[in-house]
Length: 258
Image (cartoon, rainbow, N blue to C red):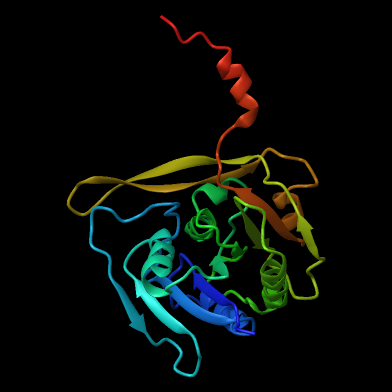
């Protein structure tokens, strides 16, 4: 049988250790094509390039590996759009994004370039998974989670995903032996308390540096934050239909006439 076609992308850039580890796992499962940003694109969310040119060049990052690779000047979402419409010639059987250096749990899913790439593929009917490890270091050790990446990707290839759903997978920063298992979770109710560090550049112009504290308001033991805090892998099914169906009846009772 023909091997499944797997698109690999990320938001940390094509040479980031996380995507290199992900590529190795995907090469066990199918024919791999990599289309990823040429530089870090963290926090880009679902941004696309509309007011600038896009470049996408074939590159060889690992000369001994079988995959085809392309580096793109745009965002993670641009990478998926270009891959599907210009490079692959057909929709892939699976899109995987990551492995991100840092958490994309809870509210962070909204800002994540990693997850937005997976969501973009999902909007085109492609089964998709975003993978993240709770370690922001470029020296992060991905080895403890690779077995679980393979398991989840295999399950996705075998069973597919419900229409309109992609998976947000986050790994705790623990040893291989320290991982207690996989939990299917809901997204925790959490938010950022933001601060802007106001500074002045050498030319005297004021600028701001965003920082803040992550606050988890959710004490539930069925959330991604609880799972990660207790050394479980969290798997959250994410939908990109953002309609608040529970609010439709209330809004339909409003008086819209003047």
